[in-house]
Image (cartoon, rainbow, N blue to C red):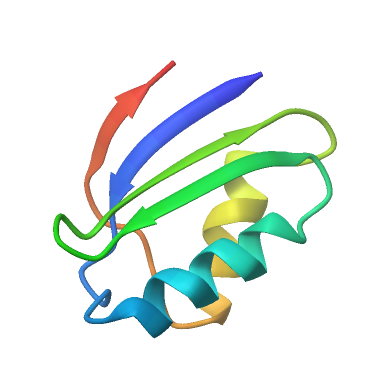
Length: 73
């Protein structure tokens, strides 16, 4: 399992965090998603068949592109 924490500058409200958590949560292989409004940070844990490229592409598609990568586990 891979886990990454990154910043999503477009997060501005609870709807934003809910949308990110719901959309990424439906991606095959994603095991957990936690988005925080206050810090604008998102933590995603996944395994196959998900990949960082697929996660980034989905975030771009829903208009919440990731910016700074904070932590990789």
